[in-house]
Length: 184
Image (cartoon, rainbow, N blue to C red):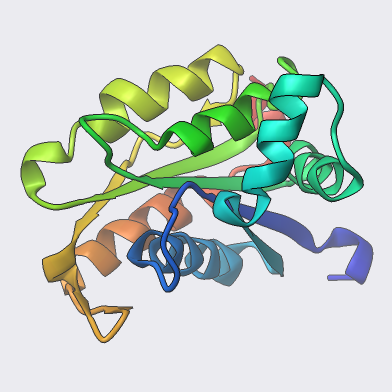
């Protein structure tokens, strides 16, 4: 595989914390995808763009740093979108970031969704909050959703083997699909 054929895997983490279990979940998903689709991984933490997102929403102009992050998402070969659960949904800053993505830029883009929450009671956030957002963008969302709680982590790393297997199923069953298969 040549450098030109390597995939660009972009993780967008909607967390406001650092270090973050949500960002770690996104990284693990991206690394699992990379096992099947070699390439580079770029992690975008929306908390680092807070002022730029706010400025863009108020003034209608994007800063160069924010534009570069949006371009990375729009041109990614595979998108991994993860957010912590806030009051039964994704974070507001995560939504504000995606409000700035061009409406058709994610059409047929392979996308894997994940979320972290305080208990398994929040696990449906992926299907009832995140999935509709990415359906709006016409993204090609993986059927396997990823959800993790604090119990799935130890010292910032995922320790739950069932969760790791689910991540691998999402990556293996989805990342190997070629763009022509996704568009069909």
